[in-house]
Image: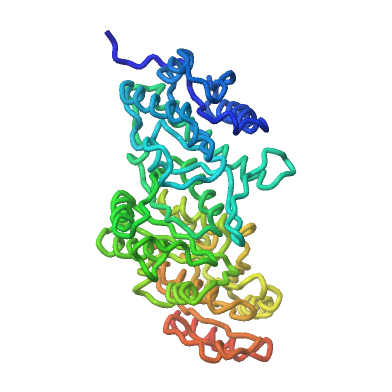
Length: 488
């Protein structure tokens, strides 16, 4: 007699009927059916009980049969779900059936899923799903802490977030169904690469979801794949174990400090994860770290302001991480590029005997930098201008210029010193990106407006060329002399 499970239902939706008085579950069912069908390539068989009345005592054979024959179980979690004896019985029944039919896990992925319609305390979640990640169909108002459910109506609150969350759910289920279609051939994506995507403060939850989605679409395993513990000793152990399984950690730094776990007094989860990942990068060859901050970050609170400042200036805290302050789309491209390996060098400037200069300038300074570009071009140099606009200049183009140019000139005008530092950091990474030749010159043209920070700005990484009173031919000639001196 074969032990192969006889599945007849792809997805079993477990829910409290009170949560469908406004047809929320009906619409959820229909949207999941459509999106999963598109992802999976065939119409899925999704079952839910549409006849049951709360308070009934008869656990029908139809329900038990569909539970036993379902590949995936989705619980629509809500306060009402936890108060329903029937719902809790369904979740326990599926857990028991799953243990008898191949187990609750496929690789590291659970066949039991929580779609959370409305928040409930974590310690009240049913035991079989307590430690699983949530697919949350709501967010929390930062001002009053109240939950705001995503609307299922096109013009309602968070409708696009509702669609994104549904896509995440459908994509995850699709992976489970495809794995169950190939019994004995299940391979976990950890066989390729596993990435640790650090927990963030609440203001970057959407950005983190977007990166998770991008990574999973490219076939990478993303950790943590379970809810991390609340108490600090357990939290640190869990993060450390996840980092050991990963080849890279990704950290998003927002305007808020983040949650402080139970047992810790000053360090948030954002700080703790960064410290653990920095330690991991010291001990594990090949482990890399990427950190992203919004371009116009305003850190709130003294603790977070201190952390953000040290992250940008303290090498021990940064620990050779790549720090990005560009668009999220450019950052996602960099993540995928880093994971898939360095792109082949285009050798864009090999065909010319003229030295090439990469003029790195923020979009705010593009017009004023034209004078420097025109002067250098008139002196016979090939000038490539960066305007720091990822829509027009992908990160791969920026990296190619850093790798291939002979000299670089950073224009420090309206941009802040953080942007300038990030450009310098990119230059220090050039060898890791594939640069083989020495620089003829690296310089920073310090233009107006004149500020105290600019007057105090110091670096050993580049020549400083002050030019506060508009275009300075003398400053340009110093740059050219530097190029020609090293060229000889």
